[in-house]
Image (cartoon, rainbow, N blue to C red; front, side):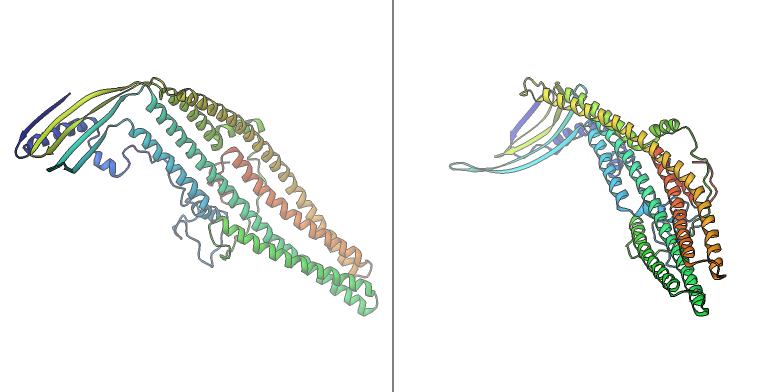
Length: 486
């Protein structure tokens, strides 16, 4: 419907044009929220459902001794709590996936905006020239466009965006847990490297003691030059092993700093590893653990959300080929050569697709194929979750048994080394027995260190496989009392 008036002379009264604009504004006021300006400045559709990575776990500084996401003072020591805390809030990987999740959250707002009308304004000035005269044309228009009916296309598109947002949120959780596990592994790898340096230093000290004993026996005539040379070789080899262990420790510290979001040359001092006895926290039926993992693992939740998004994509593809009904209207004004015209238009338009060159058909087929792809990926993720739990459970079970056997091995190796060295000093043993015992002791020390590392890492890996890697496990790894068993 349109009405137009024109008369020569001056432009029409401003009240007429303003009244037309007021009519359109009244329609918008009824349709839109009353606090639209405030919403527009913030988040009108409340899409900020993704929180940033936690700056701290509230475990590292209960008394506020340091700022979140800040490295500790140079003289401070890092425990596993501080290491994971810094890794979660400073590692670039967590920031990247959070930003990607925010992108998808904004896409939800884009999909919701399709349900609201759009208002466009237009101002134009043109200079028209003829054979003998010229004129200036001025025009203004305010147009309201509102899609009223689309038979489900917007709803399907919104559901796609919401499900992809759920998938992005789950992916964020999965990435945080992966960074969490990487930090725990890097921490205990560095602790193992540090313990290896200590073990190498002890072996070097024992080799030096054997060399001293061989030199004493050589001077008093009860030893041979061969004993002295063999002891000298063993001591040099122990020194070389200690130097290599120190180099590996420096490399491990650099990797740990990198995981924590620090420079590789950042000085780090680590706490002592608490004496931890393997518990029965995960001694449960592995089938029950797999069922729990399938309920908790964020990767599985992400795959399920992506499947739902693909299924909604099929609905969207089907609805895109259906008719649409839109409301259009708004005031218009034009001035040309001393004549003015103004009017209002309002009406309904129906867009009826008739033939699109089979575009809609193939869009539907593509959407259905994507849905099948996501269904296959979901099945693959379910199987991978079960495999992760199975392998982590077996690794932890093996590590628990190894840690007990390594303690017995270390105790017997220490006793054997003391007996062999005592016999040699007393003149009733030979240097080969001493060197063999010391070599066995060095191996037992390294196996003990590796067993402790494997147990800590396997425990964290199983928690990650189940989807319960959190601050509670950190408390137990750091030797602090737990509020609940992981």
